[in-house]
Image (cartoon, rainbow over all chains, first blue to last red; front, side, top):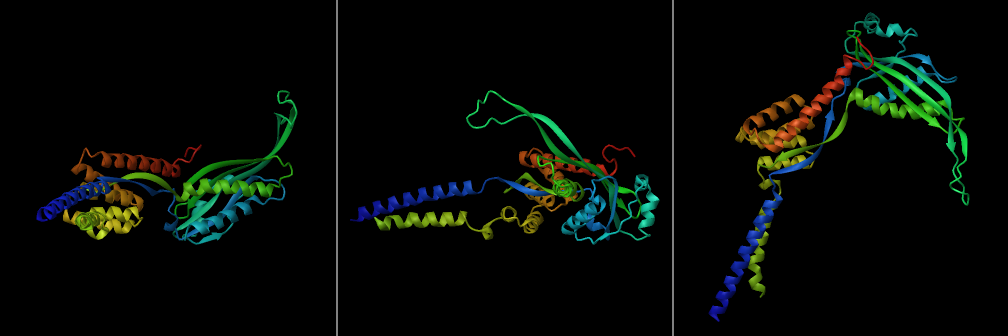
Length: 229
Length: 124
């Protein structure tokens, strides 16, 4: 009877030893030397908007726009709304951009426009919004039951709209640009009567992604190692 | 039979409990990693700062702090911590990999901010 209980005790001790070893191994596996982590890093933008007291939407110098589109007003109000959602800096709309492109480069003009107040950032630039009809000889889709190897060709037309905009951010204190970059976006439609206003809205959605990533920076997903010991 | 299983089961649960214990049982470095994994970067910085108070030559704490500074948009601090970590452990593969990636990103950011001085397609 006694030897039975000793044997059972020994067996249970052996089992607990094995269990401890297994637990220690699993503990080691749970605590590796490092972990690989995907981290959202903030990529720097060209401008720190919060360093300015005010951002003034000063309008754009317009070279060309389809009839019925006030491109300056559309661009300025769109960018004003977008800046308001992305920064806490107050935004105001004050049309200063002249029709003469050369004035965009004049430091004294912008310094004077700031009226000696510190911390003003002007958003301005030049823009052109053009449209054209493009024709292409394309193969007609074979209908059901038709011979797929006999391809008919036909002329197809598409209406294309292109926005070319150079966006400038000018520091009021110095009158010098702190950011300047040209953007070009095109949208094409098979619907030839697509309104220009609709196309402009489409294009601005694409432009804003690039512009705000350049100006204010963006988050990017990066991989880094964190060490446990 | 049942009593025979009680002791191993108890030992197993104790050992697992110890290994899976929450952050209370962890070192400051490990606690910081746990916080970072849960996106609590300020807490992670605090923990790794505490770890460095105890051991200023901990490459792990310095490396992790550098990553946290990168995450929090403090690149100068991140660079300083990476350089200190590599001074302590110059051949550490993970720290070297992190620092290489940091430098690559910093270079990309520098090129981007260069647009301010030399706008594309234009010479001033």
